Length: 398
Ligand SMILES: *Cc1c(COP(=O)(O)O)cnc(C)c1O
Image (spheres, rainbow, N blue to C red):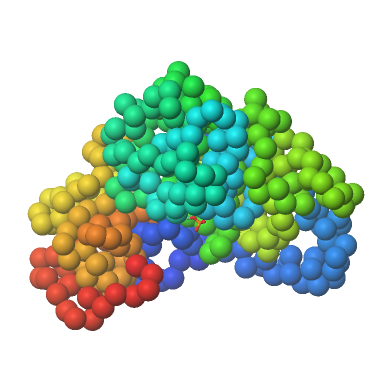
């Protein structure tokens, strides 16, 4: 397949005059989504009422859409299910792994992981008791820290701050050699680069859909369990829709077949409709093409900014195999610089303490957008346009 990124760009509603380099945090709105959601609201909910669960296929949506996500992350069909938020899916995966690998009590993660992943691990350890602990090491020290005390590794493939990418294949093999299970968080991988869960023999994976996959604010997360574990993994969050027979209304929980057991409660049908419409665009895209386009965009931005803005320090790896689909620069006035950029029509974001973060999404960002963003950033840096009080006032969401 040859992906036509000029065509996919026209399938998004991008406000005029804005260069949007924050699709790694919240993907933009596809044209087709508003009508698609409206149809689900008026024709399905409005007309079918409760019969929509059967007639509109609402009840099967979490696994049906899970299969479409599976293609994007190299997973086997029938082993991905949608629901809840990513933090919840992290908790579920961790709890199942600790139970599967009983006898071991240490979760290993790294200091580049997103705080919510670490918080969920801390909360679970507190519930399980003082023998359980979370060990956090520097990203480059993960491989060396996997020893035979580790029950499970909880690693986010691409670091949300730096864009540094772990070697999924090598770390998974290392974990298995030491008897540990693996959970990969694909928050900054799904829709950002090719992922091969099956080929890497990953045990569990989780991710969100409102970033690179463009499902909209609050879009549901996904969870993958390897086929060899799907009938063994026991869900800690044993909700009724993960039960073997939800409508038997039994008093006691019995896990559903395979990945179905990772469902918890009522699926978010309106958000799933938005996600389904966004996934239609992904059907037009080959992930190897996406990766090549993404690396060309990030290379172009790195070269342009480094040539023109000597006070910005690149924190994203230069080596392609170690880079996700974002570029980050450090600067002590990073917050104010980002506010000045946004005021001038280039939207990225800021991550404490000093990181300017830019996401590159070939579906709707092209080389001309990168050139424009580079030029505006250069102007701001050359004339210290960020040095104004209104750019230094912190908003609630950065
Ligand atoms: C974005 C992100 C989250 C957010 O979790 P939610 O529960 O969806 O708010 C969690 N983990 C990682 C690694 C992320 O990048």
